[in-house]
Amino acid sequence: MFELTGQVALVTGSSRGIGYEAAKALSRQGATVVLNGRDAAGLQAAADALRQDGGDVHTAVFDVADVDVARAAVDALLQSLGSIDIFFANAGVQHREPLASYALADFERIVFTNLTAQWALGRHLAAAMASRGHGRIIFTGSITALQGRRDITAYTAAKAALHGIVRQWAAELADSGVTVNAVAPGYIRTELTQALWEDEQFNSWLKDRVPQKRWGSPQDVAAAVVYLAARESGFVTGQVLAVDGGTTAVL
Ligand code: NDP
Image (cartoon, rainbow, N blue to C red; front, side, top):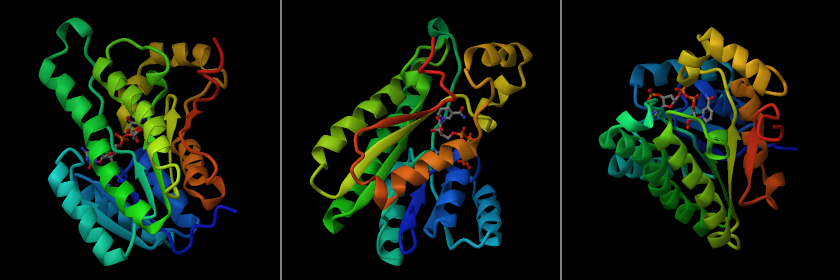
């Protein structure tokens, strides 16, 4: 099960963290993977590591928020690789600031990268997938879209809207062979959450609040991505799968 040989997966934001581990897991299932990020050197290092692991790996350096450049890069990939069967729309950014001092420019930047850019690139790929009668689109949502948390207003707004897009696109693409789902990670130990896992007070709050009493790992999320990417999950669409150690299931 979950064999991906012959399929091409584009994973945005995959030079490190959740995206990197998802790309590695997809590659180990046999997929050709395309890594993406803004920093060319970081991306090259990630690609080298995955090739050492035996993967068939390509790289595409672009900022997802640079919508025209991202679209052109995807078109070039479609030309050179023939298809993109799996799109893990994972690149995302965070900005922490209390509501009263949250600048409009920051709100717009975070919403544009985490939502608008995902919509633009995902829509482009959805059309290419639908024309071939098969595809898997997986967004990275967040449990903060399900339960409120202070200081991250733009991030939460964008992720909640992504969860909405999942259901809307599932309806629109239902008879095209393309499924649309999201993973909603809980607290995962990556560079994005470094300020939190270095904070003793936060760690003790987390141990109380997360039923499994631990940080999630990028591998925890990668396993869910492989499932949603596989042909075997073809009857699953429009779903948001929380990967959170029980956090959203338990008060
Ligand atoms: P990291 O900061 O560890 O990694 C982010 C990755 O995305 C890097 O490869 C980075 O590379 C790339 N990236 C960032 N911005 C852009 C951009 N504009 N265009 C292209 N690539 C970009 O983050 P995580 O792995 O923790 O997060 C991945 C996703 O998971 C995000 O969408 C995040 O919101 C979500 N998430 C994370 C949680 C957590 O607890 N860690 C919880 C819930 C959701 P580069 O800097 O070179 O561009």
